[in-house]
Image 1: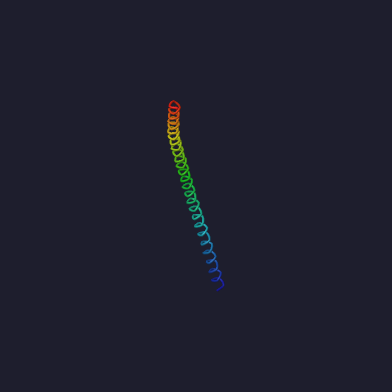
Image 2: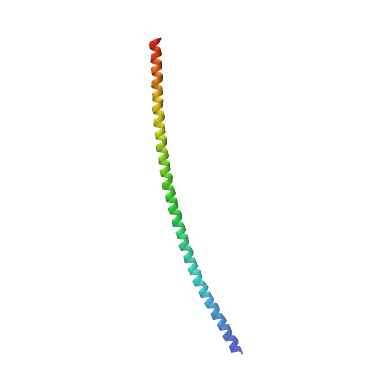
Length: 96
């Protein structure tokens, strides 16, 4: 009778060891997969950040070029307006 109890306990201990070994193995697999997925996420975030930075720089550059172009246009028209006022002023001086 005692022998059976000892054998049953040994069997239970062996099953627990097997379960523990299995759980350790599954945990290692899970941990490895988790870190692989996290590395994929980090890579994806880094790639997205790089693309966003490139797009922002491009858009900012285009915006600066547009502002510079608009400013040149305003300068040109302002110069024409100043010349026109000078011509009017000169014409009035000649008349007066």
